[in-house]
Image (cartoon, rainbow, N blue to C red; front, side, top):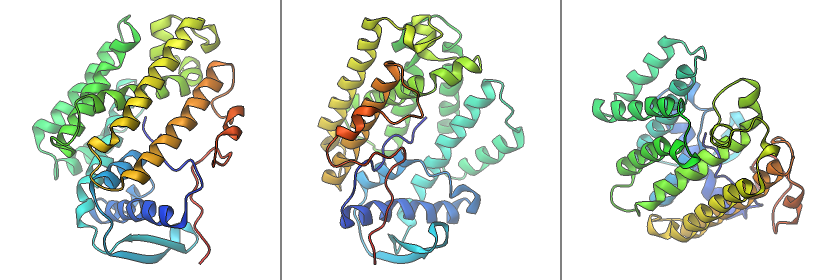
Length: 299
């Protein structure tokens, strides 16, 4: 869940500095607000949301010990990042609850610790509503439904987050689009693993298949059409909720969506989720890398 919007192209020096301004800023904010242990768990969509809502101001260069002392960039003042630190924590907390409800071993002490930290920023009704949607997701997954129905709790969660962090500066369709994209990518990427572990998978349950290659042609076309429609809508509507960094944000989103479109097509055609899609090498100005590019320019 999450982690799909990142740098899947060779950025210019300025683009990279701009991205690291937010990424490294969040890393330092997580350390200051929550503790060092939370620094490795940065969610890239949170970085993306920060870019949309906050301008670049007063950049500070530093040598990062976690990146072999290479030069990095962050805001001189990171107070404005605090809400995003707690958003990052909230998303991780939701995943922990999801694991727990799936009978995975998640220590209750750890869950209580996360909830206590969240309660220092979010009020109780907000946290309880968030938790209720995680529980709703588990109940819905016990039913035989259409694929769209399984995505509805994710839509509720995304709407809750947008209401909290974007106020009225977005179109109502945006949380729906993002929820569909995330839920679909999760279902395709995790299909084989879910089946092996006998866990719920929305595509398997909705289409009654235990092998993704057994999907009918029209079912695969439906998945790809839905992805394409959501991707197109997201790119077209970024300007409606992007207050800053419009060009870079749209570029990051576009290349991310292209990359994942190629990869899910690869999987639906019989490829493995860990393999690089063959067509990816044909995309313009991209690198054939499994992971996003984070190469700093030489100083």
